[in-house]
Amino acid sequence: MTQSITEVESRSLAIDIGGMPVRVRTTDPDFLSLLQNRYAGFVSDTEEAEIEFDVDLHPSRFADPDAEVCVTRQHGRWTLRRGDFLAEWEAAAGRGWIRQTANPYSIDAVLRIVHTLVLAKQGGFLLHSASAIRNRKAFLFAGASGAGKTTISRLAPPDATLLSDEISYVRPQGEGYAAFGTPFTGELAKLGENVSAPVRALYLLGKGRENRIEAMAPAEAARSLLANILFFAEDEELVQAVFRSTFDFVSRVPVCKLTFVPDARVWELMR
Amino acid sequence: MRLVPTSEAVHCAKCELAADVLRSSRKLRLQVTGWSMLPSIWPGDTLLVEPAKYDEVASGDVVLFLREQRLFAHRAVGRNADDSRFLTRGDAMRSEDPPVNEAELLGKVTLIWRGGKCSEPPRSLAAWERVVAHIVGRFALAARLVVVAHGRVRSQQIQMV
Image 1 (cartoon, chains in turn blue, brown):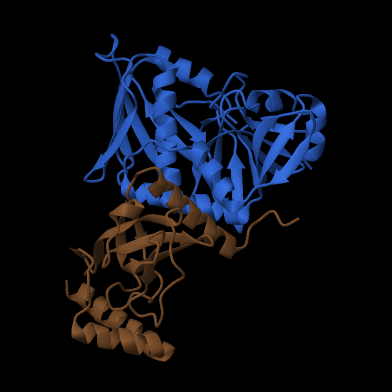
Image 2 (image 1 turned 60 degrees about the vertical axis):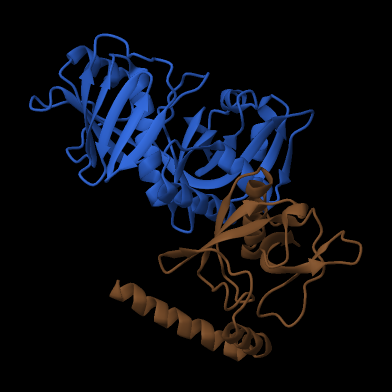
């Protein structure tokens, strides 16, 4: 994948996650360079971006840097706010702006939020899970911090392709769902590969004394899935969409408990 | 081993999660699919349900309860002899449900949305409503015809709006 930028677009780049390029414009070449490094492998040379953001870099910190994330919609315009950024996005026009300091974490959060909004309409979601492809099938590994997402990512054999060790991108595809690589990293601090595959199963992780897969009752599966879906917006329409997607996913994809001993043998179950 | 649940099992899972919401003292909105409460509540109506305890239920209330992983919104019509359970019946049903215990009770219906309008659930039926309920409760075909006719009238009203 090329990372070339034409002269006309010398201060913009397209970040392509899940096949949806988001163009980011800035007047600061250092910040652009920082983004190119941060999203290496996800920078696209496409001219077509469905979403565009102008980034307005502020030199100083915001008034309340610890403020929680807040995402609201009014008359079709989304406002995304956290202690370290403020952004607005006109969904219909696909245009918006971000005000932040020159750091990669704020724009990372904005991208995650925007993807959750777009995915919700498409029947997909971002999932707090590690994910990897093996034998052309994607496996998702969800769980709270400490459940084993980083461990299982670290134990992945050479023939497995890591999609993410922290946040997976899931969208309906055909009769099932597909998982896409993301640059959103956890403790492993390793970007996923920008590829996708049909989802074979979702595993809720737990460490134990043996490797074991157990089916989950649908209600428990849906509860666990809901607990791990990333969604930030206070928006009734999209909350309903995410709820519907949760049950659709549970009805199409096996959701199981995976208890595992933290060594490489667990991957023998991922076939 | 079947890993993907049946649609029936998924429906039951939705009911369980809805029950979770009310048990955690939050309100719930849900859409009606059955006709057992005709003509008070119609298929397609949206109900607002608020958590309620056993002692807060009075005759005439429409209560929501979970039984065998399914949700029922029926009218409370009294208590059993030792006051340990209350009795419920769908307005269009010919007989009462098996008595409802405290563990099955989830909440009370406090509002009904229908065709863009919002109202409190009626605590009793008017004479004509009792006639409709009586007919619907005895003839399944009549229930279907009433629901279809109601749906047509409603869609015309929506078009007019």
